[in-house]
Amino acid sequence: MTSLPIAGAAMTLADVEIHRDWLLAKPRDLELQSFVEADVLNGDWAPLAAQAKKLLDGHQGRLGIHGPFWGFIIASQDPDIRAVVSKRLMQALDVCANIGATQMVIHSPYTSWSYNNLDNNKGEREKIIEYTHQTLKEAVKRAEDIGLTMVIENIEDKDPHIRVDLADSFNSPAVAVSIDTGHAQYAHGYTGAPPVDYYVHAAGNRLRHIHLQDADGYADRHWSLGEGNIHWRAVFAALAKLDSNPRLIIEIKDKSKIPASAAYLASLGLAE
Image 1: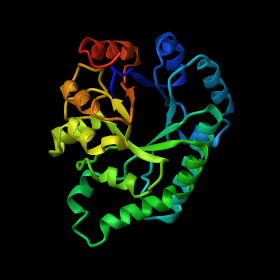
Image 2: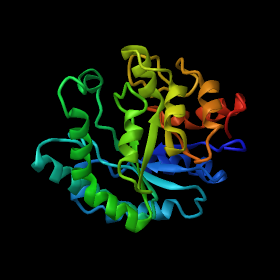
Image 3: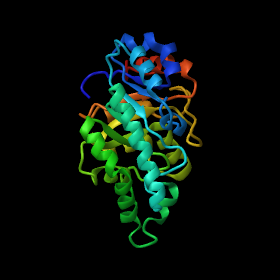
Image 4: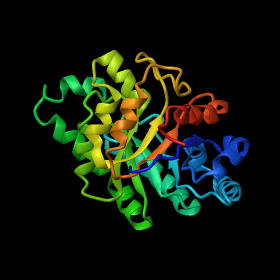
């Protein structure tokens, strides 16, 4: 990135109503989080989509959603579970096509258990990649067709490279990488993973999305930026080396502090 980036945020539609003026004041990227639940995707989500389009009239940033993730992984060895996961992702992609979203966040299948056991049994690394391909096959094709990129977010990932290799294995513009700074900080503090900026370096220009949340290295805090112990200058120094223009999405529990988080980055001279 060659100029000071503009921070966006992750919000539900209710949050967008509250922070609409802030969101529309600059071309801020938005990640909608109102289409995650199975009940929503199985039901009539058209009114929610219509509400989104009305609220976002005049929005100049890029639009994405957080995809479904509750209750499953994208690399299940059970074919019936893979079928359900594929269905959920296809439902979410239908939402994206309807509202004009060009990005969808999905969760990494790798765990802290994986890190210590992938080489314990022959073929385990290859199995996770194969199961993920079987799960995502239809979704990747659909994403390609509608011009959307699914970004794989680190959850428990201790190895910052392994998720990047998984994304690369698809050899598709529809699959790239996301980083959650708080998840990386948890992995760093609790499992001995590298610090957050190393995750950025590992992703390189495969990075298209980043969840900005502060944490203490113990739990998934989703604190407002500046409330934890993440080294933001190091993170943004790593981001400044990229040409991929990742979406900078403030994802915190207390949505009332979204403007304050953006102001904190501005006070450090890191983002608008």
